[in-house]
Length: 152
Image (tube, rainbow, N blue to C red; front, side, top):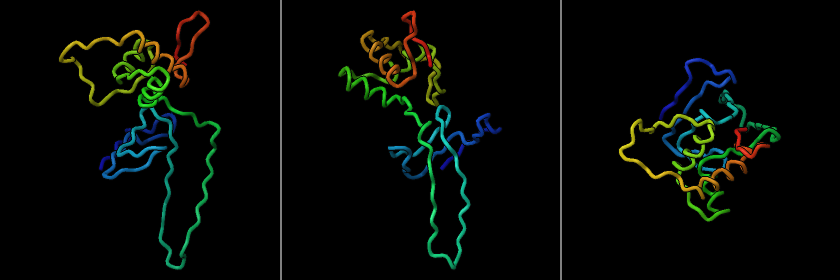
C-alpha cells in the first residue's frame, strides 16, 4: 500500500524507512500490516526471481548467523514482563514517561500531540520501579556503581 524510503542511503546501508501492506505479513513471531525500521535493526535482502520454463523446481538455501541476534524491548514486551513479574498493568504512556526520565532514545510517534487536551496523571512510583526493572531485564538500561540508572 505504501513504501517510505530515506532520501539518501543511511550510514548502515539502509534505504527503507517504512512499509505498509494491504494484507497481513509475518515478521519475527507476529503478524503485522506495517514495518517501521526507524528503531529496528534488520537485514534487507533483494532477490531477483525469474521464471524458467524448463525448470520445475528451484532450491534456495539461506543461513542466518544467530550470534548477534538480540531480543528488542518493545513496549508490548515490557508490558507483558511487568504484568507477569509484578501483576501490574502499565500503559505505553507510562513506559514513554520512564524512558524520557532516563533520557533513553525514543522514535518520533506519528500520532504525537504537541499540546495535550488535558493534564494526565504521572506514572505511579511502583510502576516506575517495575518499568525500570523491565528495561534492565531487556538490557536497555543498567545500574551503575553509584546506584543511578544509565542507558546502555
